[in-house]
Image 1: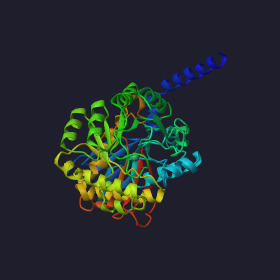
Image 2: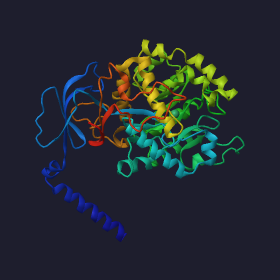
Image 3: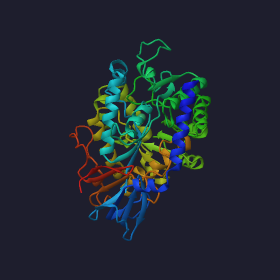
Image 4: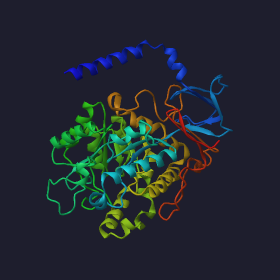
Length: 462
Ligand SMILES: [Zn+2]
């Protein structure tokens, strides 16, 4: 009781102290950076605007086509390059290093996961991603380390444990494991198998307790995973609704791994706001998405003809058969997305080594431009991602004070400067035109000259 009281006393004192300092003290502490002579892509517009951007503290203070007067600011002359919002990855798995689910379940300790996550976080930031949403496996610890400045990485929105049905896409148990036996993944709260709506509620609430900003529900199977057909319709409507209900208790939302059209439609009808993969996307889906104000993120590598040749698919007959049937069903995605555009964010979904994921991220950027052109790709990588992460709401969003993914007054100062004009040469954003068999990539693309996150510069080669 004594301890509790004195703790309260300390809290009250510091609260009063904070209040009694004049606003002036805060102003003096804010450093200013002025970017001049740049062409600004604001995250939305079809055209770049010639102008200048003033950053104060961790926010964008002013954006103008006129000169900005800021005598105390550090000036960075952009030399006619392009200034744009830091990229947003809407579906990554920073903790999952591969090479297979059984390997991660059987031979990986928490140290392996933590070290991999640390390196992945740095890789993403240095590829220009100032925000990453994690679609399963990562809890709140990585974010705490990044935000405390202990390690280098992007803003981080983890989903904690994937929640899925037994035998589904989030079941990491060995083939011979008795039903109900805990797994390495469940002990570390990286994946949980639910058998009922009550289980979904239990694991969902536990995820928020462990630092999740939203929930991830596994509604479909996968192509490379072992037990589950990709066509799986996992989970009853009551279970999906239970996930949505728990997320809503926290003012947040559910992202659902959904392949088949039936899965996508039932997820949307249950209140899921973010459809992951969504390969069977068509104009009916687009219509319901619009009505429900929902988003989609899709790994475009799934449409790469080389997919059938990768060893994890080509050497495993069951996976090869699954990949072929999936490719046939998913063939309409690109055309449907052009015909009935939906709010789509960037997704890489790499599970593998840091070197392999660096290559895959660069290739995913390249495919976006190949399929959808530079403007749509840039919007996908910036402002739409910013809208998605904001769905985590006022209580669970770790960065609730400003917008992400846009260059506008009052937004967070997450800023890149790249060489040239990405509308004419998209490769300046750090693309790679090869996936399997590609050479390892540099730690950061040469053409990305400035990387600023939260007003702090992590790279400057100007
Ligand atoms: Zn994923």
